[in-house]
Length: 204
Image (cartoon, rainbow, N blue to C red):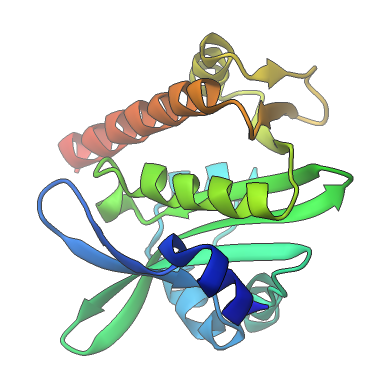
């Protein structure tokens, strides 16, 4: 399956350049990446972990990391951004989705705090959208904490469908085949990530 994807979606792998001049390798996530996912989790701020897992998540167990790394590229898809520092690979971001119904998938993106605000999340999401269209996905669904009112306001302004709060979270739906809507939402996410990163640096 991976070899087929490399043929039909050559942009799935390759070098991406971030604002500021940093270069990263983007490639499909591998089952052997579980230890790198644990390292990524450990380097996320408490705030980033909270937003990603919709609650406190101080640690990621090896079993949980192996589950996240178990992607088959039939129902579970994930791509990673790799930083190579002195010959050692570090995963600094992951974008993923899982097909949960006909034409529908749940998506999630996490970017290490020191790489936020540089355009990485947008670059990964654009690749994820290409992968989703290839897989026949028509819309992404996901959850945002109901308390994250700023993000929900940005998403609503961007045109996403916002559901009703349930168990402290709100379901958000983004149509995959609406490029203008997707770009507005990506811009909202990017602006919010940059704001949070700037606030974190000034507070430190």
